[in-house]
Length: 211
Image 1 (cartoon, rainbow, N blue to C red):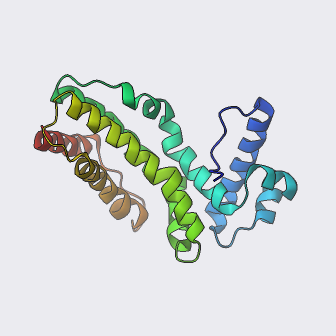
Image 2: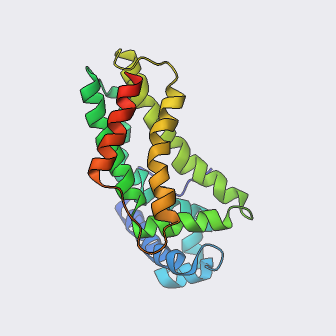
């Protein structure tokens, strides 16, 4: 499956063209929404032909999920790549790292463009199953694997006491997604991002429960 994320071996020229398309697509999709926007609109906004647009992206689904990736996991790709090499010697080290990850997730989720694009996915989901599958493949599953690797490393080091890392991942993400959903996606008026103190307290409570 073509994911819509940037290939690692792409030439500088092709990379620049892809960014040109994404910049235009981001504006069109945020302003018009997934269903109202057309590939014609996006090609015109990017000043490229439809042939060029389809060379880089097979459809709106790939474009939208690629944009969401850029605004979330794509911003933390280096941290994710090194997850399997992490070592934790104490609960304090695990807590410090999780706090860093949690703050990054919250900052990503509360970007206005991220919220607008995810709302487009939610609105279109019942009629576009390929879109929701791509969202799962490109955003949800890689994020889950990254967090699982963190907690598995902590378990292997003897820092956490439970073997049910799946439950720990869901507890960690669930506490953060509560803010994203309640005070971001469903906010009346301006989104209300949680404070660093609130994030720190949630991470502290989680680590205390699993160590």
